[in-house]
Amino acid sequence: KVQAKVYRELNPPNLILMGPGPSNVDPRVLKAMSSPIVGHLDPFFLEVMDETVELLRYLFRTENRFCVPLSGTGTAGMEAAICNIVEKGDEVVVGVNGFFGQRMSEIVSRCGGKSIEVKAGWGEIITKDAVKEALSQSKAKVVAVVHGETSTGVIQPIKEISKVAKEYGALLLVDAVTSLAGCELDVDDFGIDICYSCSQKCLNCPPGLAPITLNDRALEKVKNRKTPVQSWYLDLSLIESYWLQGRAYHHTAPISLIYGLREALRIAYEEGFERRWERHKKNSLALTNGIEAMGLKMHAPNHRLPSLNSVDVPQGVSELEIRRILLNKFGIEIGGGLGLLKDKIWRIGLMGMNSSERNVVLVLEAFERALKEKGFPVKLGEGVRAAMELFGH
Figure 1: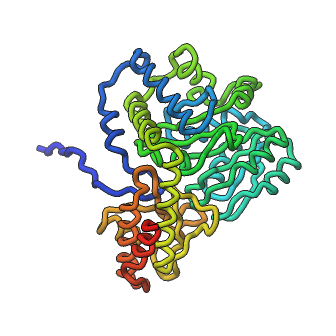
Figure 2 (figure 1 turned 120 degrees about the vertical axis):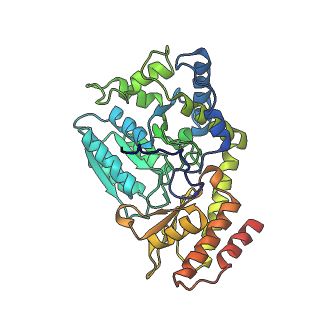
């Protein structure tokens, strides 16, 4: 007789998630998600939806009417933003200075558009002059850039590119997956027309939701399309009818995830966006001080993203072995490089509640010990000391 296989209760490791995402989920978010389920058209849930929209407007810093969480991950936000705006034959200027700029370019092509790539090194920004040149030599009416490039740790200045886009009558589409709630982002002041993000990074929610906002100018572009949006599920006109107009059935919303997002947004609201931005910046500077004091170099010397810090792997050191030591000995997860930077950088996330003095000190001490174990000439305590000096000031 064959014995039936036994499936044990889940018991995942309790890790400190300091990679490129997901981040640790806030206990308040977990508590909210354990609340009783109601119907997705129940009056109680409709009220939750309204409050979620209000809090998203606060966090995006926008007066846009269209501001909702899509049922899908950050990539669903990217695809929705592009496939609703781009039709066959449309030219789109896409900033490519990392892995996710490349992904935007590919989605433009899959929508039948022509991606006009403005390229920069992986660790550099897209310049306004390069965008202007691309616009002047094309018929593009959309410019797409990544605000916080997760693959490199670079934060893209937006305002200058926004001015250039407006000069040519183009919509500005911005990926804020790793920047929303972790660094300065002001959709209205920056002149952003379409902006999307995700739930699992600086908001400390599980993956599965993609906040997105469009202004009236962008919505007009969606509503005046010559052809239907190629994705029925991500058609923002249909989603608008569910979230904002009449509550027409579109799909069964992930109710527990919406509960969690509302609580995460409430946490950010209580802290205040400026205080939250400053906290992320301070902790990133302290981490940078510690990394450099250890004899390592940050990958992006300028325009560093506070929520995702990239560190060059020194010659003779195995990127993977250091990550394994951090994971197995210290319970700390960090990320390796993607694409052109595979095996060349470490990516250290300081996102939401994970952006703390405690976590900066923990990861620096663990890094020192891991590097020492692998023969890298580091003096134990130097990185922590340098970080603590900044915190002391």
